[in-house]
Every structure is written in structure tokens, then in C-alpha cells.
Image (spheres, one colour):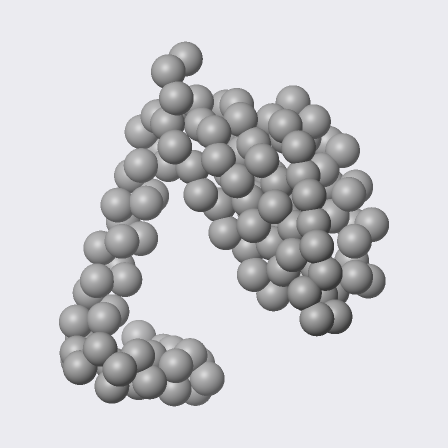
Length: 123
């Protein structure tokens, strides 16, 4: 497995802070990823939020993507944090559309953080 140097340094800092080995941290991270993947793909309808951090220069690109997903976006809000925007997009709808929206937002250059948090809801 190849890990970028900066990510490896962060991992080593975490191992020291938590007094755990690299293997333990990586195993826990993989377990969490698998659980999240299973959760995202098991329930069809979702509600939740997408949290983004990005520079102001790509704001229009974010809005252009959001316009194509009005069927799952309930509301979005943002605030400036230093020189960047923190945007929270509240979503509800079919799992595939929400995941597709999240992936499109993540794929934009200069998006520094993108995370989808969901809960399952009855159909």
C-alpha cells in the first residue's frame, strides 16, 4: 500500500496521540469505511447534509452543480471561515442522487473538504 508522505505524517501524529500502532489506526479506518459504505448502500431513502470547505473562486461551480440537484437539496447555507467558505447543504431523497451530488462536489478542483453525513428514512 502506498500512502502520501503528508498523510503518513498525519497518521504518525495520530498514532502518538492515541498511543496506537499504524496497523490499529488503519484497521479502524477501514472498518469505519466499510460500515459507512454498507450503510449508504443498504437504505434507499436518505436525509442528511453535505459539508464543504472551498475557496470563493469556485462558488459559481458549486451553485451550478446544486441547480441540477434541486430534487434532493432542501436548503444550503454558508459562512466565511478565514478566506474560505464553509457550506452546508441539507439533503433528502433517493440515496443514488445524494451520493451522485456528493461525488460531483468532491470532484471539483480546490474543494478542500467534502463529507456526506446521512441517516436512513422510511420510504
